[in-house]
Length: 486
Image (cartoon, rainbow, N blue to C red; front, side, top):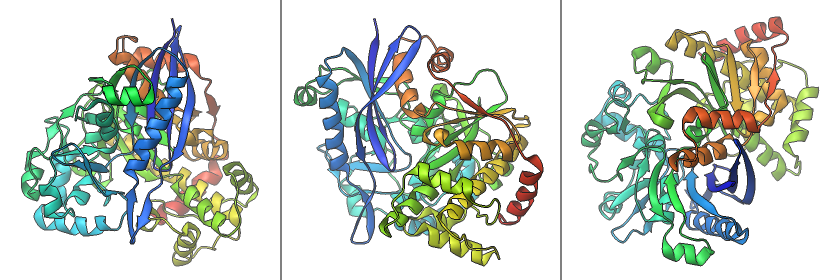
């Protein structure tokens, strides 16, 4: 008999409720409900409309109930670092802040005064990013924290809404820069240095933890039975990597979406002076594996540029932008995607133009030139990142798996293969939702192991292979690009 599961997949741009069906060693997915998740600006500050997102989940659950299928379980995954504070009654304290809000800069300064960056990295193995939870939580007013009984990260807040059980799943907890991957606990040292209560953050649970049944009142409201609620991999990248259809060794992954997360799976964290200076992070994956990776601003650059062009009357689909990029001249202008200016929203083309002017390059002449500039720059940044991964692990990486929404962008995939000079295997697109669903299946005993889950992905989806082209041109561009990183 086919087995059905629900995955609520929350991205920084949109959210979905996905129906997964496991049948005879294959899995299929169907999007039941899609909704925007974008942050809203109120009085100059960026927040998430948390109540609105919860209502969208309920709308999706009603659609699932209407299908009259025997659904086994549900789990939510989300972006990292952001959180919800809850009072004694279990009610959320609004607002729920967005990691792109400018308050994080003040948080960095507050933390700097209390503990040094080398100590933070030694304790957590997480790369410095001003948006990390550690820099957000210290900006909270003391009276708001005093009213807080517990803190849950976004994906886990949705699991709490569904089950009534408050746990921070380890893959999402590891994004906070307050988790110690060696002791596998919240960092008492950092909590003490920052004056945070040890019981502020809800307890940590393993990936694939069964939290309990769907709350009775919620089940009644949406028309579902009390299906199991599972903390699968609550971090979207953790879920995506869990579903990478790889076998054997010497492969890397790139979870390509709003963010590009590039890395390898490791048995143990790599927390060294070299990994710190190279900006690598040690996030936790399924089965307490370590995702040694780098967070890279990814298709956010395209998304924000497209948003700006739409405001000026030039509304285009992503496929149209890709065609314009293919027609544009190669390697005219390049940017460093890691430059802090590209983290914040609003008028991305202006920021790109500013970078080009400052570095003595031509400003892109038209939309196609802007998109090509972004594509080429991302591919070259992936090349630099891969070389650093090889240095840290001492292993030559022989192939790259690209998963997530960006895996359908054939031009960027080909540019990535060209830049890296290794084969790129693209797909599946729905890797985040798949990982969420497959970890649920493992937790319920419907799949015997993680390896079996990856085999299901390979059996279910056709991967597209991109082989490297034009090595001399890309080598020359890489030399130019590396000068922009200093």
